[in-house]
Amino acid sequence: MRLHELPDPQRFLRDHGGEVTVAVASARFGVGNALMDALPGLGAIVHFGVGHETTDVVRARARGIDVSNTPDVLTDCVADLAVGALIDVMRRMSAADRYVRAGGWSTAPFPLAARVSGKRVGVLGLGRIGRAVARRLEGFGVEVAYCSRLPVPGVPYRRLPTALALAEACDALVVTVAGGAGTEGLVSAAVLDALGPEGHLVNVARGSVVDEPALVAAVEEGRIAGAALDVFADEPNVPRALLDSDRVVLLPHIASATRETREAMADLVLRNVERFMTEGVLLTPVPGPTH
Image 1 (cartoon, rainbow, N blue to C red):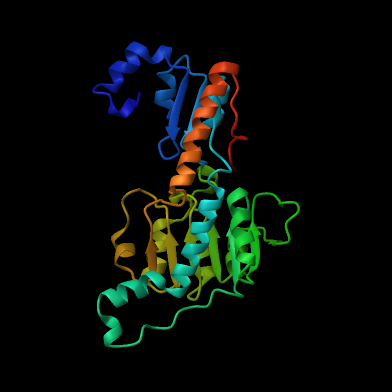
Image 2: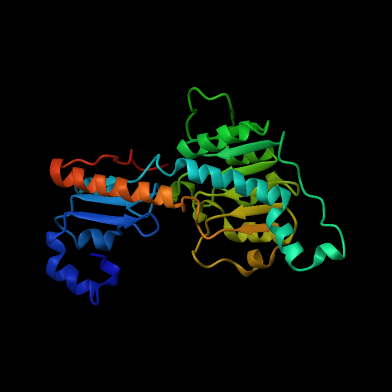
């Protein structure tokens, strides 16, 4: 059953919380500490999505609760959208569409945009999705660099030690790093300033990774050229300044939202539940807290 759809979730937890052995949660909400405490027999938390920062994994493991997510099956679609969003914001495709629909083409040419091919693009977080983004960008003759907590073996890309250094070295920054306390505000005002007035930002990670007030200020003051955002700090609420800006592409957290990928994610969730119920282990346990 879906806990949030019950007429009295708290009563259900009081009456039946001890009977629950597996909880399935979205990456957005996870299993908070209060809910975890209300489920004394909980043995596994299965996330629908790759993110798991909304569940305290360390606390869960201390209680003997295993945690899983749905990696790999969404990598391609998220990477596809990230590259599409980069092209969109740099070439101003969404803005041009609005321009035509509003009748602007009949009065004046649409302003020139930025070239994508041959540019320097930084990938912030070279995990599964980050590597998939980088591979796609190679087809555009892009010079890829990255920043990750640790060097990634076997990749041809230059590693820079900090998000600030990466932004200073790039024309565009694609954010694919995991969310959580360790990456909150990682794309700060200083990083945005380093990206500069000709720089573009793409975020398909978590809204918390970008200092959203700093981004709003950078957009309003023209300190970055534009941004394409699939995630926000307080979804589904989007700051009015971003809604009003013609230099920002806004998406409703749809990076993995294709029929094929969502079906694969659901299937992996069910296989994790089945594996735990029959064998006591998870098929795709998360590797540990992200720092």
